[in-house]
Image 1 (cartoon, rainbow, N blue to C red):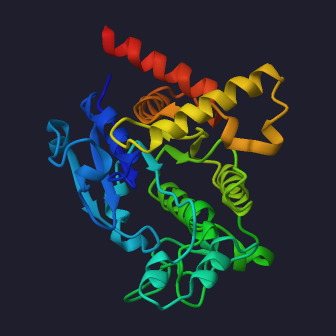
Image 2: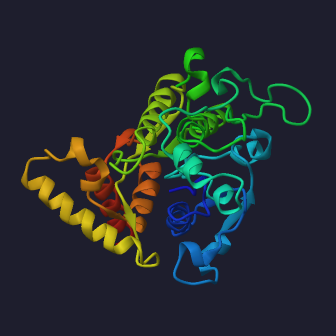
Length: 310
């Protein structure tokens, strides 16, 4: 099997770094894109030092809303992975520095509506415009805040009517991947929303999935929908995963009746490494496309595990 080249946007994050690790185990060519470059290893693993496999990855700096900063890295890629996300939109730094009140921050975090981008990313041409900032997508929020619309949808369906409120990161990245003739695009989505999160957290992800699938048909689009991700290197995730597993068992006993109410809170939690293995296996298996839910994620990870034992 020939070595593949993958580009992981958000490759220095909790899941993104593990996707890079899984791809490195297959000796693939890997480029990680993020605003900061290489990870702060203590935040994604149990060690502050870089693991051996990290040397197999090109840790590049780029801004997904500024295509000129990463277009060159997409050339020749077999797959692009969007592995970025936010849970809450509150400007916690603004609250801590006194620029915004606590009440204001909470209001912004749980707002029913927010601005997406200042333009429709699907109406751009590659290299649209001239000079500095050409082809860039900007937040429609007055202070440039990163919203669910930007993070979950716009970078990853867009209509003129919904322009002011649509997600940008996945759509923009998927469009740039299509421009570069990349065969496959993987969007790390989510199984469902949760009672403690604004409804827009999940609706913007679903809008992104729908738009990418319908507007960019040349891509083999894969939408990974895991529940809560955990790992022992992030100790705080373990009790949450335990509670989620208990909730999932109860939900199974009642035939899934709790899902409409609790969403991801009763979805089976998955180890981050398992999801990463499934993502890489999905890229390798050209028959995989569309929505990949929890059971399919586990099945793909098992295939990857058996492949590694050969």
